[in-house]
Image 1 (cartoon, rainbow, N blue to C red):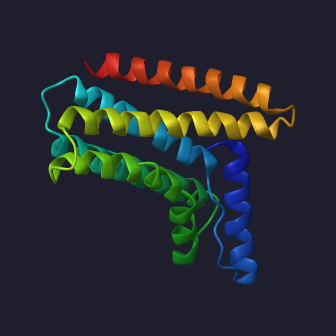
Image 2 (image 1 turned 45 degrees about the vertical axis):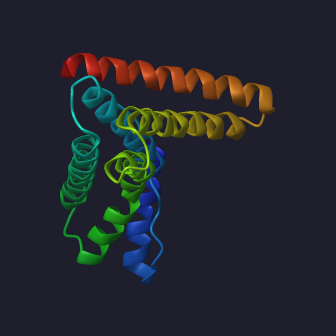
Image 3 (image 1 turned 90 degrees about the vertical axis):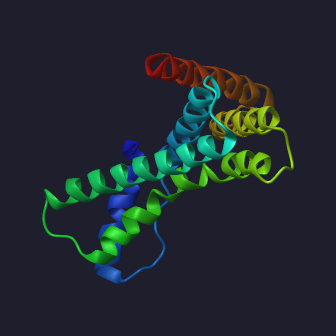
Length: 176
């Protein structure tokens, strides 16, 4: 979790404990990490002879495992300071939900092959494109947050997307 998101979630959890609020903070880093993870898993499996149903299953299980890991590490981190409540754990888990959401569209696109709507190669390509598209959109959001116009925003999106793809390529290289 990025420091600003961690601070926001921790403050939200602490405020929730004091005031009984119900809306969790959403972790942007979790969404971005989820997009990187999905693209990596699809790209790594696409290099093999895996069927799309297996790739979709790998994406779902992989992202859920990483989500649980992230939630658990945040729970442990807070527990080092003192006891936490079940509601705080639920809020932390909700804050990390964007990681799971990053897998939804690519998984649906992979499943389209399983039910015969698309060819396996097309489904895999579309799933990869959806993940890369998410990386581009995150870069665009970053660029727009700079408040320096659309040209800069697009340049930042392209650079961030390229860096994301470099990270994916390195991960796939390590896995194979």
